[in-house]
Image (tube, rainbow over all chains, first blue to last red; front, side):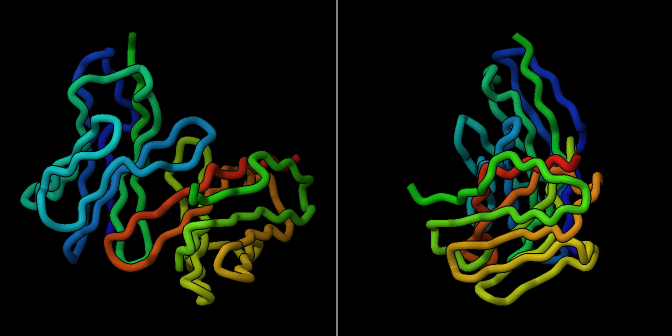
Length: 111
Length: 113
């Protein structure tokens, strides 16, 4: 069975500070990992994904994530937070045609 | 632009009155999903179609049904909505196969009164 765990349901950072959102996965097979962002009353938008190859994945809006097999982690980072980054972030792992989402992390950016 | 479109964005229905939510896609994707998302929770998969093959999650209540008349459209029918069914309903599509991402619609916010 595949699953993801997001540590920290709420994260607050100051504008311009580093954003770090944590995700650990559990998978019996090589994982396919995703980060999605959700703004209020909107659907989910793909930020980035890891399938194979380079373990550092760059996404949209300046976000990136690093796949670390030894730590079973796929943490999301952004060097400098912007007010527009305030949203809910979901980590997910996929298994063929199913996606398993974490419980989400709500990011607040303090001006 | 190719996309996933959900209608309506907001739906109010009466307790026990059947309601249908719709989803269409212009991506020509094989897989279509319906998720239920309650406040501050992760999306919960209700069911998905791979082409015409219907896959129901084991814990999806019988009150929820789905139809996919063709590649482009998929419907979520709630036969007798209860107060606990108030949620955001998200439709998503995927090409299908390992490593492919899901594309989400804007969602339909269902209120049950």
